[in-house]
Structure formats: structure tokens, C-alpha cells
Image 1 (cartoon, rainbow, N blue to C red):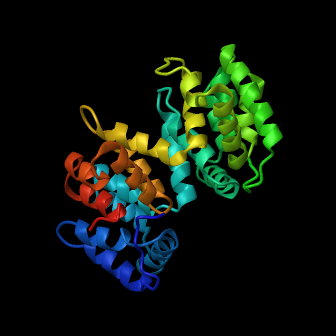
Image 2 (cartoon, one colour):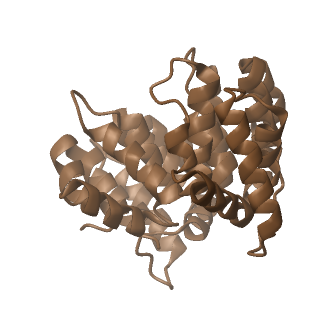
Image 3 (cartoon, helix red, strand yellow):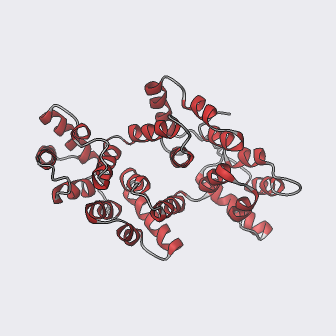
Length: 313
């Protein structure tokens, strides 16, 4: 369930005028920007951008980029983009980093339906003139490359039908691969990248029934091995996305310093999907409301933007 409350009827022209006014004069009216964009859904934001450009002969995104700064600017920029285009940008930013983390690639591959993932791949191609699969292959290597290219290239069946016999058989194959420490086994990558979400969850349930423990608990933890860390992330994402995102939020907030990139990414990408349920899970697991944690760890207009997307006025 979404946390963003968007009115069904809005005057796109008035929204465009309000945003123009917020960006004129001595200083920017950040609160006015939040008041408009923080309460508009993806379709409405797209219409606002189109009408703004028609009226003022100016790209609204570029204008906001020039007016805003810091974490607030990044949050607004990511929010105002069409979801497929946003995910394409997030993927490109991650691929350009010199680290071994692949959160964005795993998230878009394992939590989107087939049409959404296809739209992201098209958006990436249109924006960067290269395919997402090509970019993933170029920036990764060995088993990590095999897994991520397979995941990002997938077009899974998205229905609820499952094959129980197949689930039992593939749960056994996964167990044998893990037991023998053959984590890059062809069957492991094939199963995770081709089966439907419903089928995979049935397989993970069979795994627990057969082995008396979950598949994630049998995978090595805190591994410095890039592939195993990516594999574990993919399994967690496929198994229970809400638990996965709750953990990303928790890790972005706890400890010394805040990981604003991760915090912004989860709130912005899930606000129109299931952020309400993720919030409830966060509260249950941490004994503190997510809104309160965000309020404590962030400040200024950035804080106000995140809290608005969380449904907290």
C-alpha cells in the first residue's frame, strides 16, 4: 500500500504555476515545491512536467536541479522522474561506482513485474544509448556477472500458479548446491532468474520444510565474496521484498552516520507501492515508527520531503 496521498482531481496548470512561482525571486520556496510534488502521483507529475514546459518553454527538472541542492535536490529529482526513468538513473549511478554493491540492479530485477522491468530497460537504452544488460556485463565479472545479467534480462511469468512437484525438486537442487558450496551452480542462477515469484516462494517454502531452516540462513553471512553477497541479496529480495526493504532502511539509519542514498532510494521507489506495509514492519521490528527515525536522522527540507512521502504531514 502506498503512503503518498494524491488527490484524484488536480489542476496541472495551477501546479505548474505554483512551481514556477516557487522558483522565482530571491530564493526558492522549498515548502511550496514539497506541497505540490509530494502529493502528486507519477501520472500527475508527468503531466505537470509537460504543462510546465508548454507554458514556460523550460524543462522543470532542469530548473529544479538549478534551484535546489544537497540531499533534498536528489530526493526531488528522483521523485519527479517517471518510475522507469528513475530506476534507469539509479542503475546507471550504481554501475559507475567503483564498489562491489549491486543493490539497485538486484532490486529492480527482483521486485518489478516483467513489464516494469522491460520499461526500465527501455528507459535505460533511451537515456544512455546502451542496453542495461550490456552495462551490467561490462561492470561485473565471473559468477556475479552471470547472475546479474540473467536477473536483469528476465521476463518472468507473473501469475500465481505454481507447480508443487517442481518446487520440491528445485528446492532439493538449491540445497545440494549450497551444501556442496557450489553457489555459482548453473541450476542456482537458472532457478532464481527464470521462475515466477510465486514459484520461487513455493520453492523456498519447500526448502524450509525439507531442511528445517530457511535458504537465507544456509547461505554464508557477512561474506566478503562479491558473488555470495549478491546471491544472498537476490534471494532475500525474491523471498520477501518488504523484509528486504525494511532491512535496507534500518541499516541506512542505524549506526554512525546516515546512508542518505539508501534511505532516499527506498522511500522514493516504494512510496507509491508498498511503503505503508514496510513502515509497519519497521515499527514492529524496531519498536520505533519509521517517521520518528527519519525525523531524528535527517533535517531541513530533505527531512520534510521524506516525511511527506512517508505520509506524515
